[in-house]
Image (tube, rainbow, N blue to C red):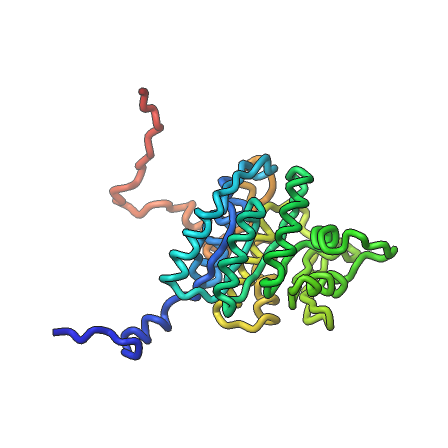
Length: 313
């Protein structure tokens, strides 16, 4: 008779060591694949983690524009998350756009019950939404979720408008100014992206109210991207889940995003989508060789073509 595994058995220990770090992500389903859960899942897998996706709603969008968003009921969101949390050890929680204040409240309640799990929160640009809904969403996020957020991620202009609406100085706020405003809501660290610099460059700064912890500058790409923010915040969450310290994880996540954007592609008629699996693409030389000889001689699948779908009802 086989002896059952105990918590200290070598077999179970080996299995735990080989299990990827788990990141629970709260986000909406994006049918274009540009952002939302599609970005979270592919990014987390790409950097070596395992995504636990909690669907908070669905976008109605294409690669060029967001037209609307339908939020799930907060009880559905809660049941998804709590069922998984009771089964799987989670290293980091990542929060994207979750649709309405009720879902924010539900996620804040869940996070409060797991205070040892760091929270990476990403605030996207919500200018596509109705103004009154934006205000109620941002107010709820600031009141309920920011006090539990470990790292806040967002574009400079988005965080400026949200956290410093009464900014009256002639100069733009620095990353530390924004981090100070976020800290007043309980956030210890803020990653501010897209800070304009001369000569078509941008700065990305990790800051606390006390100091700038690090920054990475990049040259702007001559393209408009969809899904870059979800990609960066998901990469940061996954790298933190693997045990990296915050500074190293931030640098690695920004470098990863830069490579994703550099290899970006346009799947439709809208914006460019980051290639989160850029490392899996064949080198140019390999691709040319494959084009010259797509099949081996005698390959039984050579010439096989999927027929069109012409079923008539």
